[in-house]
Length: 423
Image (cartoon, rainbow, N blue to C red; front, side, top):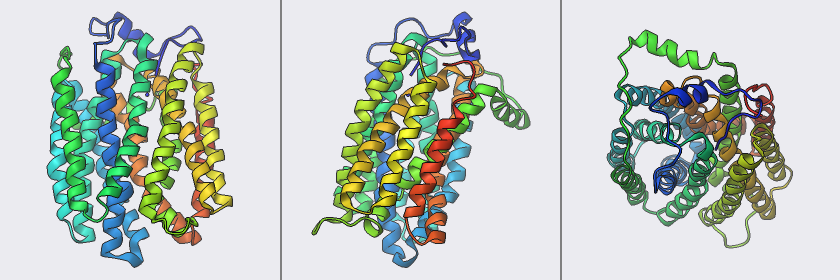
């Protein structure tokens, strides 16, 4: 989610290669690309938030209320394998084919049968299998659409492009929470609605954007492909960007992934308010704050050519926000947390995405390396409920979860300091 050339006077490998490559993005972003990126990412996050944050949590609770925390964590942990494997693999395959649109379309359309299967599941085992399939197809979609920015957007416009991508999270979170709450009594239909939203976005994006076919890549033995994935993390700046993103996202989604259960079991709600209705209020509040900070963060980081400062400050603000519900279980504290954490996370994702695109090791491996980076983005989102279940089970409550998440946010802020090629 942003970009411009590093203030130190050096350029990243990706940036220097792109400047001399005939297939590098032109100086003008294609008309309509940024709104379509917004739509595509909004649909993706709507499914992630609405399914994992609302419908899946309710479905698991209905099947086994006494063990909802551990069961939800188990499903999240197993599905994490599929999320972390399919994202970079799909990115490498799209690199090899020289195309992104077919992968966006295929992953988006496949979301419909995956969500249908999830709605039909009536045991913890079947839910696990179905959500693993859902994670697989959604990460095919995510790997391809994430690579559109380094492929098609010039360096000078990546702040705007990253803001467009970043806005997908608050818009998608709001849509996901509202749709999830609306179908809380009928998750089978709700799942299909989310699948249809992603499929529709995929059709719209691929029908309305033209892509210049990149040179096809020669196939590599599996052993060499695995070595290539690991090789991206040998790059000093890329490795630290990966670590910082993973820590911050893990802390953020450890709390938001369990938000329904937090509201049910930790927060003192106003009389008459149901937990699903509370989530449907918290998400839009956080999203409005996120929209404001995403736009301002992307613009100001371009304006002042400072990425690390904005990323670090945003991560620290997230830590402050996470402490609030740790010291108070009141509804007011949750509202304050939602607003402040939305401001922090929106700015972080907008500017950190710009930073990431500037430290990609090689332009010709952009999709593969963005896929590797997306392990730090998608993996923690799915692993987070598993981590949260362990913390909550061991500590006996959610206060420790907020503290752990705050510590992870501080560590994420510290991780950007060693990056050398970006200010």
